[in-house]
Structures are given as C-alpha cells and as structure tokens.
Amino acid sequence: QVQLVESGGGLVQAGGSLRLSCTASGRTFSSYTMAWFRQRAEKEREFVSAIYLSGAWTYYADSVKGRFTISRDNAKNTVYLQMNSLKPEDTAIYYCATKRTPYISNYDRTAEYGFWGQGTQVTVSS
Picture 1: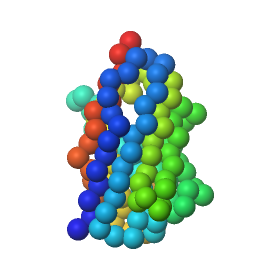
Picture 2: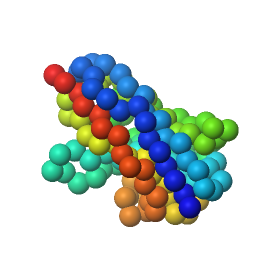
Picture 3: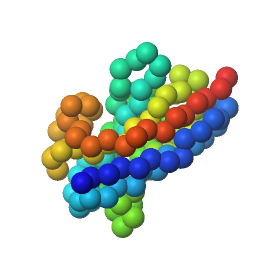
Picture 4: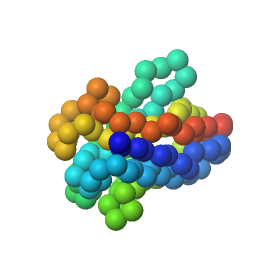
C-alpha cells in the first residue's frame, strides 16, 4: 500500500518561505512522478509542480514559476517543495501525490494521480 506523508506547512508572512516535505512508502519511489497540488478555499484542487525520475524534468504552474522549487531525494523517498516569496494567494492545503503509472504524461491532471497524502495547511498572512 502506497502511503504519502506531508509535513512543513504553517503560518508565514507574505514574502516569507516554507519548505514542504513528502515521504513515500510502499513502492519503488524513484520510478514514479511525484507532484504537489493545492486546494484553496472554495476552489478546485490545482496543479502546483511535478518532478520526474531523478529530477531531470520539473514542471510548474505559471502562478508559482520562479518562486517555488521542487526536488526529490530518492535515497530518502522524499520530495520537497521549497516555497519562496510567498503571497496571500498561496494560502491553501497542499497535497503530495504520486501517479498510478511511471509515465510523466498529463502530469498536471488530478485524475492521473492514484495516491495522495493527507495535506498540509499553508497560510500566508498579508
């Protein structure tokens, strides 16, 4: 059974930084795309970032490009999301996810991801 456990959320002032972590168990971590999604109040869950294999390919939503950085440590089965220059509109529950298949295609679609963490709250005050 694949399990994902996120940590690192919290309250931060606008312009500040946070680093989210997600540790996976239950299968060969390095073979699968890992991603971060977020869900803001009364909004649908949206793609934030994805990373493929060892990190040679990374993808970002336009809204976070240049501010967020995704990375992974396959030896620790962990994926990270470094969030800098945070804005109040980044306030959301952030979810870690991994795809059902090893392929990178459709990396920004929630339906492609079969396993999700419980979510971690990020609140950015103005």
